[in-house]
Amino acid sequence: LNAPTKLMKEEDYGAGYRYDHDEPDAFSGQDYFPEKMGRRTFYDPPERGFERDIRKRLDYWAKLRGERQK
Image (cartoon, rainbow, N blue to C red; front, side):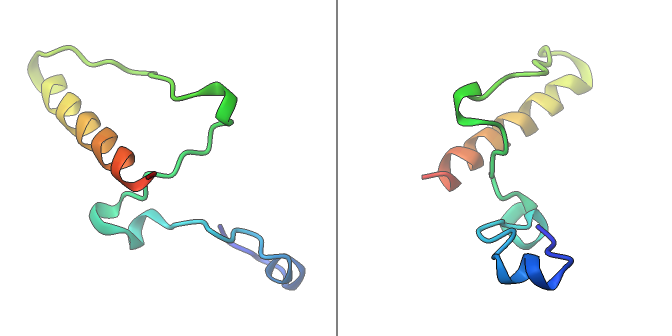
């Protein structure tokens, strides 16, 4: 995360943040939801038309997230 002030930089604001565009495949896999919430599914595309491709992309990101959060 951006630390726009000197104080924020001194306090290590954003330490540990991984910028997606600097990561392989432009995906860090970081999760910003509270731990108690768990991972939620907001969209579950059906296996038809273009949504089939979206499903593949979402599955790929889920795989990367699992690998990068270990």
